[in-house]
Amino acid sequence: MTLPIPGKNLYKLLTLLILLALIASVWMPAVLIWKIALVITAIIALLDLLLLYRREPPQAKREVHTSIPLGVKRTVSLQLTNHSKYPWTFDVFDHYPNEFEAIGLPLNLSLDKGGSADVRYQVTAKSRGKFNFIGVQFHLYSRWGLWERDYRLLLDSQVHVYPNFSAIPHLNLLATDNQLSQLGIIKKPRRGQGQDFHQLREYREGDSIRQIDWKATSRIRKVISREYQDERDQEVIFLLDCGHRMRAIDDELSHFDHTLNALLMLSYVALRQGDAVGLSSFGGSNRWISPKKGYHTIQRILNTTYDLQPGTDAPDYTQAASDLLVRHKKRALVIILSNVRDEDSTELQAAVRLLKRRHLVLLASLREQRLDDVLHAPPTDIDTALRTGATHHYLQQRKAAFDALVSQGVIAVDVAPQNLGVSLINSYLNIKSSGKL
Image 1 (tube, rainbow, N blue to C red):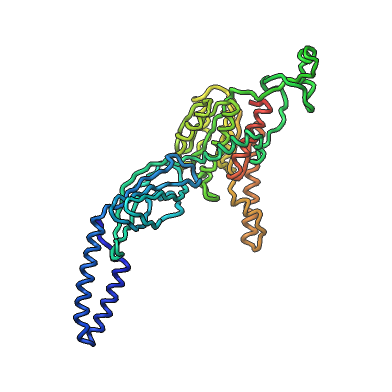
Image 2 (image 1 turned 90 degrees about the horizontal axis):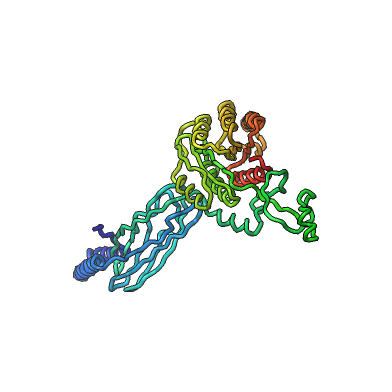
């Protein structure tokens, strides 16, 4: 049982008693009045305290999504009920995880006897993993406001914070409306012979002569074209770096969290194209998902990566490539997701040579936003001038490392974390349309 806390009204009564005591010290007839007031105050305070602890505290139920995307606001609902025969006035605070931010707490409420209320507040998860809401705390006010007490109701709710999957329904809607360009995703016209036959249709302006089906044209006496679709039943495998460099943070999310969000977006697009998607992590935490088709694969990826965190180890690209070659034999598009530095050039080239024996390799590297900020800021003194020059030198070395990989036939992108998703999808669609895979 928690100890009572004196309320504001009790302090007001005590202030009046002190004033009466001062008056009684100089005017004797006021002594009797002061003693009577003191007794009445004690009786009222004790009665108010007794009623505070005899009344049944409010009850609460919590409704919260068991799966929450990282960095997205979600609403939590508290259903509060007063089973007491008397009204309650109280403050309520929900003990959400420390890794969350909340808006709308604490709340001050008054409930009539037998009354109830449904209150809501918003939380934003700042870290992935498994977390618990451990309880609801009430700060109760006595009937006459002389006392207060804290009452804690144990109410456990477990939530899983996943990478930001909330963008997938939006991506689905844009794809349905053929508005992917709003995200910066560009679907280029198909070239070459790397596509599967889809259907016959009437000739449209812009169709090449090679698309015309002359037999169908002569039979129907209309110009008929063959329509092709990108090849299906191919495989995409993400090689995810969990090393120390992915811990870098440019905004609210780490590079690793940005990478997981982009990975989910591209997974959805690839599955929609009829391809299988898999994942292999390296650099501290080694997890493997064999390539599978179907939208249930998104859930497999979420369940595998929601508690995956970047460690303090350096990435071992050669070992990661060797492990993948042992695990998977069929040709696939292997997408290396990392933060590449110029000192990685030799080891990364060796890893790429291993992978290229069987797979098509796409390297996606995250560039620190801070580098772009330094280049865009005009130098104002010798220190900023030296910093700008050093940044240019670093980026030139980084570009040289990328050029060496591109010369080996690797497709490489080097983008800021927030642009990774769109760049990956564009690169994937270009690979599909060119028939390289």
